[in-house]
Amino acid sequence: MASSFNFVIGSAKFIFAPIERCLNCKRNFDENMKVLQKLLKELNTVKEVIELRLSAEIHGGTMQTEEVKNWLDDVQRIKTEIEIIERKAKEKKFLSRVFLGKMVEEKVVELKAFLRKGKAFLGMVKSFKYIIVGGGVAAGYAAREFDRQGLKPGQLAIISKEAVAPYERPTLSKGYLNPNPKAAARLPEFHVCVGSGGDRLLPDWYKEKGIQLILGTEIVKVNLALKTLVSAAGEIFKFQTLIIATGSTVIRLTDFQVEGADAKNIFYLRELEDADKLVESIKMKKYGKAVIIGGGYIGLEVAAAMSINDFDVTMVYPDPWCMPRLFTPTMAAFYESYYENKGIKIIKGTVSVGFNANANGEVKGVKLKDGRVLEADIVVVGVGARPLTALFKGQLEEDKGGIKTDGFFKTSMPGVYAVGDVATFPIKLYNEMRRVEHVDHARKSAEHAVKAIKANETVLWRQCWRNFVFQRRQSIITEAKIWVLLDQRWKDCWSFP
Image (cartoon, rainbow, N blue to C red; front, side):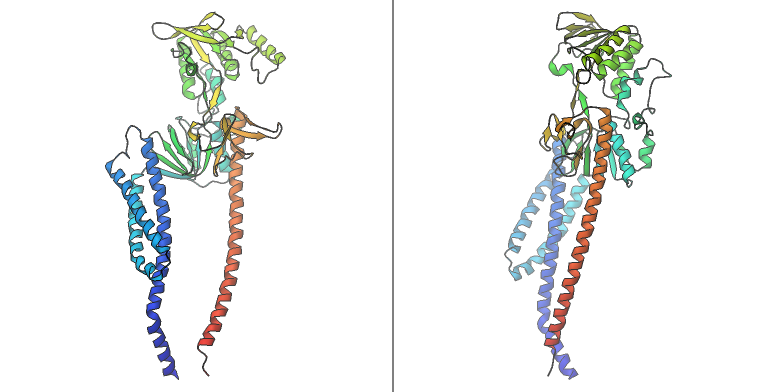
C-alpha cells in the first residue's frame, strides 16, 4: 500500500513539474509586470520634473547638458518597448506570457538603473510632507499651529524670498520708523507671533522644532499636478500638502507708466528691505519735505511716522475722505482733523500724474492732476496691493482676484490650500465670496487651514483603518472557505475503496 502511494506521488510530481514551472513563470511575470508599471510611473514623474527644471533654466544651468538630453531620449525608447510588452501580455496567451518573463525581468533591471541616473540628475530635490510658500505673517502662524497639532522633525518647510524668519509686517510702518534709536523696533523683537500676544518665534525655534526655513529663495515655477516647486536657482521641492501664503505685492506707479515714477527716493513699503531703505533716506533728508500718496493704512501710518521724524508732510489721495472702505465720513473727519492739528497737510480729490527729479535722479517734486506741483525730498506711495497668484494661473480656480477656496481654505486642487491675502473665501455673514487684506485674517486663516489639514488626515487615517479591518475580515472568511473546499477535494482525490 505504501509503495503504491509513493508511486502515485512520484508520478504526480513528474507529470505536474513542468506545469508547476510554467505556473511559477506566469506568477513571476505578473509580479514583475506590477513592479515594472510602478517603476515606469516613478520614471515618468522624474522625467516630468527634469523637463520642468530644464524649462526653468532659461539661460542655462546644471540640467542643460547632452547627458540629460540623451537620458530623456532613452526614457522615451524604453517606454515604447514596455508598451510593446504590455500589448503582447494583453493577448492573454499563456505561453507568450511565460516567454515574455525573461524580457520583463531585464526591463525591471534597466528601469531601476534609469531611475537611479535620473535621480542623480535631480541631486537638488528636497521633499517635505508640508510646504508653505511665502514667509510672511501667515507662514509663521501656520508653523506654530502645525507644532501645536503635532509635527515630526523634517516634515515642514517654509520657502521665503525674504532673508529673515517670519515677522509681524505691520511693524514696518509703525515702530520701525521711530526716530529714537532706543525705541525703534528692530528684529528679533517683532518676529511672529508677538503681534497677537504670543511668543516670539526666533530662527532657533524653527530649528528646535525640525522646521526647515529656506530663506532667500524665490519660487519661479510651480506644477501642482506633480506637487513640484522650482526655485530661481534651479532647486526642486516636492510636497504632499502645500499652503500658499505668498501674500501681496505693492501696486507701483511705474505699472501705469507715470512720468518720473522711477526716480530715486520714491518708496513703497512691503518688506523689511523696503523699510531699511526708507530709514536710510529719512536720515539723509532730515527736516525735508515728504509727500505721501494714498489715504489708506500705509498712507496714514507713514504720514504720522514722517511727521514724528520732523518732516514737512503732505498727504495726497483721490477719495473724498481717508480710508473710504472702512471709515464713515464722520470717522474720517475726526482723523483728518487730528492729522491737520499735527501739521500734516491733506489734499483730497486728486492724484499724482508725474514727478520731477534733479540731476542726480532724486525726486524733487510731485505733479498733481489739478496742476499743482508739491516739493518733495521723499515720496512714499501706498495705493494698494495685488495678490501674488501668477505662479498658480491656470492650475487653480480663481475668484475676485484671488485663489478660490472653501471654508477650510482648501483650493480646487487636492492637497493645496491658500491663506491670507491670496485667498478668496466664503463669508457666511454676507453670504458671498470675499478676499481680505488684513493681518488678523492672515493669522487666523493660516491657523484655520492647518487645523483643517490635520483634521482631514485624522479622518483619512480612521477611514483607512476601518477599510483595512473590513477587508481583512473578508479576506479571513474567504481564506477559510477556500481551505474547507481544498480539504474536501483532497479527501475526494485520495480516498481509496
